[in-house]
Image: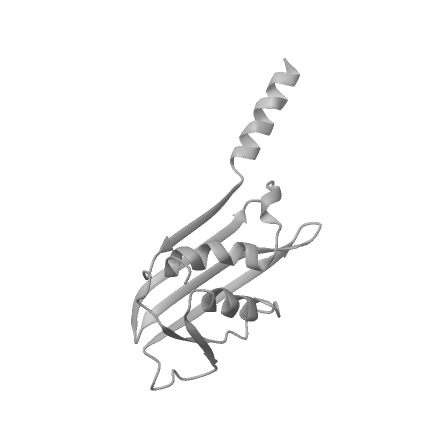
Length: 141
């Protein structure tokens, strides 16, 4: 009987562990040039370069800016990302928001904050960003 109760408790604990993604796509071909606002609060050094690689793989020209949106930027992206430690560093949360001037036109969220018991929370930043960026911008060029 005790084994059955422990098994049920373990099963309930594991089913509560989830990694969620949510994407509102911009659409394939809608964005050809994208300005990315740097976020100094994102402390993982490789995040922005990986994000740029993923965006460029869709045939989109990408460049960064620090403060004010340059006048010649029609589309821009703002992002945030957080990491946690559990035997290794892993991406816990990432949010990408694409704007056309001031209007939000697309958004992608990766949320592993409740994925504590899942081993697929581990992986490279690129492996976590690629599906988000692919769905956000459509088919690769």
